[in-house]
Length: 604
Figure (spheres, rainbow, N blue to C red):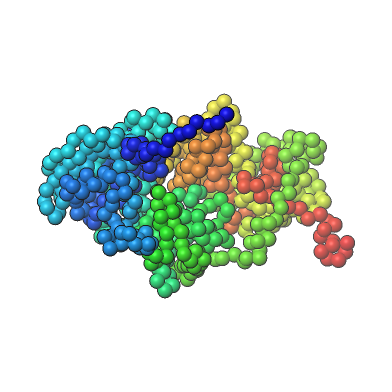
């Protein structure tokens, strides 16, 4: 069949704008980013943002910048019309290589106007005249004088109201609000010389003053305790300059959402930069933890291409190797040469050996067909658990428990404790060899299984009420996630409630955790919900949260245990399923058979 001849036609302007909007205006946060960047490029000293329903019903951005004349407003609503490229550069081959403003494409305003009701009011500082123009989904409906102080105010209402195919793919208002908050936070961090105000549904959610120091601005927007847990980064290589604030390796988070990277004042999410950060912290952080930092890289405009993606969050460097080396070197120098609060870098060879060591499943601990463990575990389950919990309470309270007689090694598969090495590893003698136990990893598994068992019962897990409820300050999206999961968390003994927009109140913690740190516990739980909340079922999310709780409630490495306490831990390990591996999949104990020991001394 001969295909029908089709005539090539120009698309209508309104359809062209809607197609462009699919790239530029992905969600309310995308439109907000474009409007705030326009305000920054206009020379504003203060920018005020108002949102409603996550930006779905209202986005309003007001600034005190240079403003626009009536003819400039009309021109700004045309595609590919911009004031960001100087007259001398237009038409030059190197025009885009020397862009110093955040915006330059001239696509944002017409794209937004094609999928929403857009109102622009502006008063030019040059003429003193104010003008207003309103476009509703591509149709001009108002054009006339206005009254407002010098600057510009842009309102976006009913975003995607007439594009149901786009609107139905947006997330909830809470999710869209979280994305919008992140946009404002990043832009405010990039420009400490500008004041920002953000209001959401009539409530002030963020406010920073103009003219702040970079480290002060970062601390205000990331975490108040960042200054006490960070080092300054400052490294120069010719025209390249890297500055910023880097959190200590011991002060980390469970998600990478607190890593902020900027290139020439532009917030970016570049794989090269993220990979360089990961490499700098490679041997100082656990694999499931992430650094907290804000890095600002300044380099000549012609050495970086910002015209890679319409969203302008990706960049391409002319000398990518130099950029990566600067980030790795700058971070490592700051962490090791700063004020000496950094953790010591472990031996590289030992770290690599630990990373590649295979995790051997310890089947006898969990397998029901093991007659030895079945016989040992079944009659002693209640007795061992009760004994260890008594010792556990004494250890957590730092009290010395009464000594019990040391059992015989032949009666227990994990043997009897003979001592402790480096305040971390229990040395036990079994009938068939020498057993080494990681006390923190082992107790972490025991606490997790206890929490699971309590949650699987009919009632809620025992909770330990705090004498004074503790307030934990978090980002508002994290508070939303904690609030949504509060009922499930309460089943396992973590009782929390919302305490204002950016804080939660902890009333009780699981009794199995003993005396933990509610602040650190709730922050890590919030990170777990942020990392896994959207993709996992409720039961799977809670299971990961329980693992976090167990880590906070376990006996730490570095804690001195008595022989009786060590033996009680060994007995409960024998009676607990899956106790051969910790919550992260690493072994909790290893055994050297008598034959292996003899070979070490040349007897085999």
